[in-house]
Image 1 (spheres, one colour):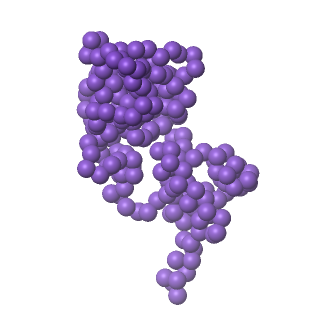
Image 2: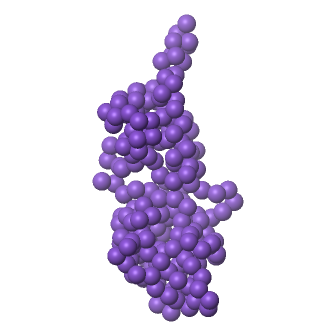
Length: 208
């Protein structure tokens, strides 16, 4: 009887199960967690009601949150292997190009952000040129090593002529590359010599 009672206590209600499913789907599609307001909007309920459901789910050990982090709601399944260490290589500019800073140190990221059989690394973002893509100053981007990206994808671009790296959306334009910021107050620029070093596959929000 005790075992059955324990299972029942940890079982989510129908609405809580729906919220868990929404959080998991949102994370998969956006590479970051939904806010309380986004959850409330999806289910047409109030933010205090969402907060109550989240509190219950935390008590039932079905998700985790970090009070000091934005968008930190994550489904929890008690498996440490869901976090993987990759190297944090340093800074990358999301404004103008800056010199690459390489000082590897490990950082834990969700396994769901990574692709099997590929190499990944992380970079801390400096600047605000990618804010309309949900990447702010101080955030950490997860990058999959690859030498090409499709037009419009976010990439780490090395500019050999300037010995600098930058984070931009990439477009091909005849014999040159167009590097486009995601900030309406900043203009794109063109380079003829560009080496793609990886595609952005996830974002870790900075701590408040």
